[in-house]
Length: 540
Image (cartoon, rainbow, N blue to C red):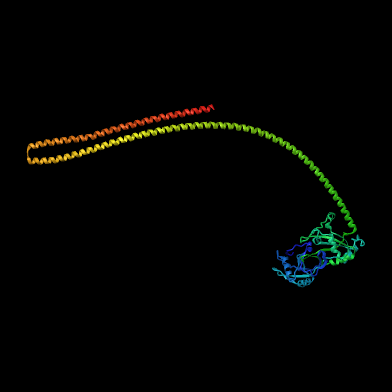
């Protein structure tokens, strides 16, 4: 088994062949219907086959995108307007490429046929075969043999002979009327476009019939890769000549639309001859009968829907009435419940009010008692303050008197001290005078002794001794008197100081007795005020 992985960069589907592509070269285009800007352009398509090498390395892969890039490079300066993978296998890759015109097909074939390419990572070369693409289009022999061999066909009956073309992949926008919806094709536009090949007997676009999908069970709305809505249609010519002319003209062609801005886009369409007797009289009649049945069935459905709707409305009305009754009952119950609740709340509120009033009265009573006690307390404090003020005033007055007494005592002491100082100064003066007298006496004695020595007489000496003794006796008497006087003054001063100290002690004792008496009276008054407040509170 070959271990080969092929990566693809473009998806492949059957509808991809009918995607629109931009056309840059419109020289080969022929008119189909200039009124709708529709043309026929030859299909310029080639088929390229690339032989793949036999790989033995597992997991190795070949990139389709790289192969496509090599092919594009080989046809340069020619360009592929589209290049896609039509078939992929383990042995080869088949591409379908489209170029702008027929002359480019020949030049591209000459550059690709028999050539080879080498991919990166691979030693083997890849052989290329290129041929012009053959379109799958029915020939005259195909439809002649089909209608000749078909046993249920009658070549004399329209629709059962080769006169109807079946078209698929037509863009809705290209076949819409200018004043109509852009995504809805028109049978008139289809008739106008294809009557170029001959007189048309009938046309049909199944997607315009609202009952067709239900009749056939087929969806007629298809989308291409470009996002445009495509449709299928049937065109029936009156004679065989128009049918043949149309088939010959559409063979190998694709549909091209040129816009007002000059840009052109092309779309591949599928053209076959009708093999289902789609536009035969029997088929038209059958579809008409089915349409009528479906219309009748639709009417019955609408009637059924109307009856169901009326029944639904009636049921809803009954349910609404029932809900209203239930709502009314619920409302009545709710009102009753609310009334009872309000009654309970009212009673509770009254009890709460009474309780609150009682509590308020008690609080007011307490506040009044508190106010009375506060006032009594204030009165007691005022009395105490008054007594304190009086006591302070008394104490201050006593202190003032005591201070005055002390000042008087201090003045007396100052006067006594002054007297003592004066006496001391007098004694000092007396002492100095006595000392002076003693000095004079010594001088006189010395002088007398000198005189006695000179006179040497006894009488004089005795007399002198008597004088000296009298003088000494007088001096000693004066000295002793001077000594006694300070002692007596000191004794008197000490006596006065002791008397002053005794008066001060007596005054302190009297003050203590008064303060004791005042404290006892204040305690008695406080006890009396407490007893009064207690009696008042008990009375209240």
